[in-house]
Image (cartoon, rainbow, N blue to C red; front, side):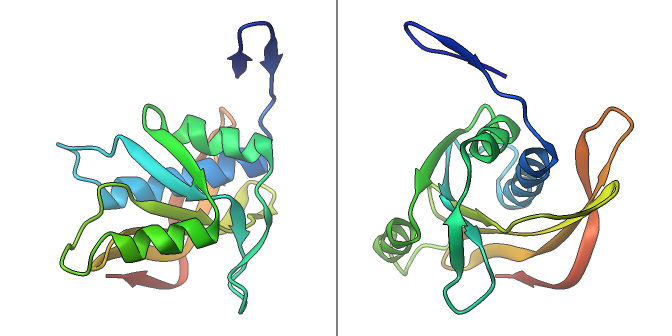
Length: 156
């Protein structure tokens, strides 16, 4: 994709990791949003989900951020730290079941040929959320699509 600023144009080639992360996050967003009122903005945690005690690891690289932004277009993606996401979740009130701006997170994809797995989740309110491991397949055109799940899945 070309990114144009006032003085330069930069072309970023997305790799499989970038496209897999984008496809998995898009899948989770489409699960949670009302098709009649899609989200205008989605918050994305700026670090890889680890599943360990610390929950988050290294920062998500710029190319993967772009892959996620492209997959979620025309929604705006606001990149937040885990601490900012936690503060927003607490501030959104315990009496609401849905958030105006959901929070998504994604783990580092594991790729084996044309198959990948990746942890992805969305918190869309105090009683609204989906998380678990997605299975993706690479199509003939090179696009990645979620084809199923692997392991336990959570829903609230």
